[in-house]
Length: 500
Image 1: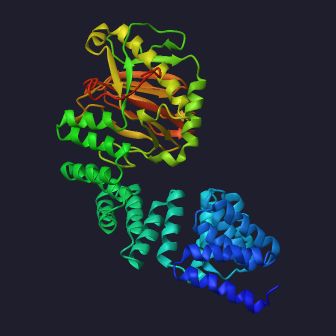
Image 2 (image 1 turned 30 degrees about the vertical axis):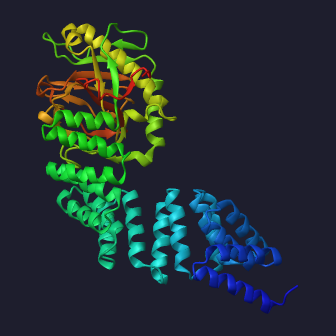
Image 3 (image 1 turned 90 degrees about the vertical axis):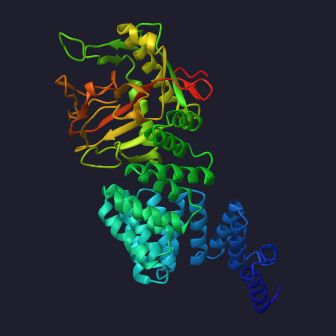
């Protein structure tokens, strides 16, 4: 066997190739080194590093596991093993390897950063924040990066004020960091400071003109502050960067509608997220639904009510909502995020998603909604002649915790941009312990949330309404609109029953 001096020389040669960017040479040299010195942990560690760089994740894991088996006290190998496990999304196992690395080398700040990242991905937010803080104390890693990570934890903890402070500090430390400015904008939006958020997003988009995320947030905020022409240009930039971005297409369409360019707006929506077709008849209430009276009145209120016979549909929708937390966003009104007006967590469903695995619960619900709409048309036959079938654009599932509300009195057709809306619909997905009633102000009607209760009502100002504060428990709803159909040459999407 070669002497230790020869081993070190060969190891240094691999390192020199790596440093010079001769990756193929380095990878081949590391492979030969590991084969020549099968008992040398350092050889397997460098081979693992190069395999990871060549996108051979499984091979890298094998090399790092061999290195840690040969030398259980080799902290760097444990760290590298944890790093690759994180890249593969195996955060729980990564945490074990990274904790071992920290036990062996507790003074390396980078280990704490990756450890914090793994903890955050598991929802262990307080521990993640502590790991990031420890990396700051040790030093040697970009403070801007760490402040950015701490801000992300604060956002996860719903502490937007603290998040904004961390992101602002990150941006001050590294003014050319697009992510720092982008995240600062996100925190400011949570705080309702829309104008400040707009400037942060403008800066982020300028620093990274190829970032579709920055361009999209900039466009959304321009729309929130009423700068519709600028928003249109920004959405088109997003679609140049990311042509299949359904959210950008949807919001571009809504913005064009606000500008009175209805045909262009509806075309953008249909060609992006698509629409759900819903039939208005013929047919009366069937086995899946039961008509209920919302309130006794001498004159009609045009507020239709039904109870879903199979309430498990509601449970499945709540499960779907909770399982897709990556899609959650702060609830918005027509003028953006304003917690005083609406305090909720929303998940937007795009019609084009309904054929994807995992969306079966939503598609099943829409079949029940279609039956409610058919029965509504039975009660009001003139509507059936005017709207024999309607369409549904992207809609939302919403969660209101204790203190949550939609107290701002609103209706669903408030400008020419919403002229296509005919009806609104909503189903309560759970029994709320206390509070959360829907109040129709002009009728003096308060509707108590009950699992499976479904409402359909006109989108007009006559049916201005609000959602009361939830004082105990949670309130989940699914809600959207039925609108006039688009012209046949631009309609895309799916039917409520799942056909084409």
